[in-house]
Length: 96
Image (cartoon, rainbow, N blue to C red; front, top):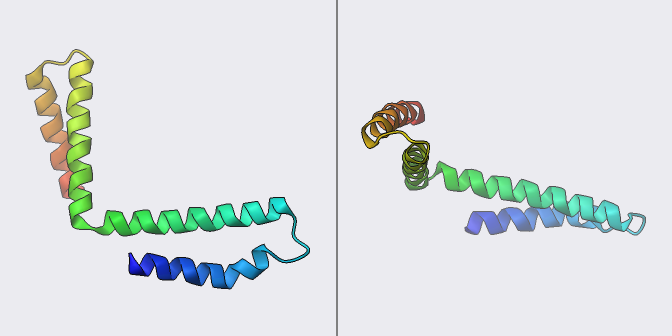
């Protein structure tokens, strides 16, 4: 979290003056702020996904959603479980 705050402060220091220069329009300022927000959001998401606990939780959620979706689409519990086991084992091998 501290690194995220530091990154935000650095981006504002580097690009803040350019975004709010006298000659720039409101649309330019809005576009610049939107671009900075998207960059910071992407960096925060990548930091979160790099955490092994978060990655495992995302994989577990994916597998559960897949299972529920298969049941909703008239697969039997056994068929759904076989598909989930095959898919999630493949995903776990790819994530390592």
